[in-house]
Image (cartoon, rainbow, N blue to C red; front, side, top):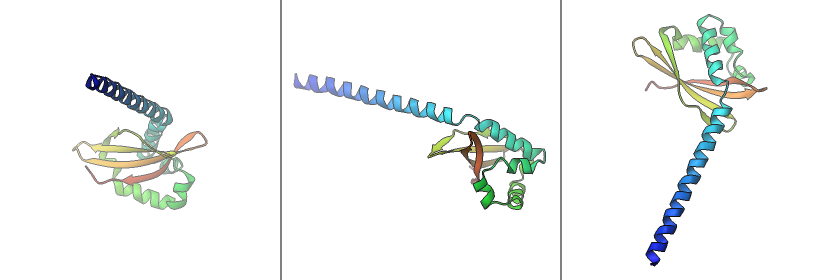
Length: 140
């Protein structure tokens, strides 16, 4: 009889633990989705401006912190080194929340199936998302 009682309590404890984990995961996912709103349009605007030659407009989508570390010429050289004109397709990954920042891996794909993964770090400035860091990742 003691074994039956222990088993019943263990089953209920396991169910409660799984329920708490599911609740935590759901709250975290909702928080991430709500906090990341506005990032995809910013990514689209960034690449549209770069593609149309409006590099200054893309540069202004970055934070003051970014611009204090990367001047306009360095930004242009960085973009030129990426050879963005050979990529046609953009796929964004799952955003990751880290402190007050959102990190998003964006993969650019060429027609020849070549991939260029970039990590974008975003921060909110005056209720608008801005690019705080762009990092080229090793191709996967």
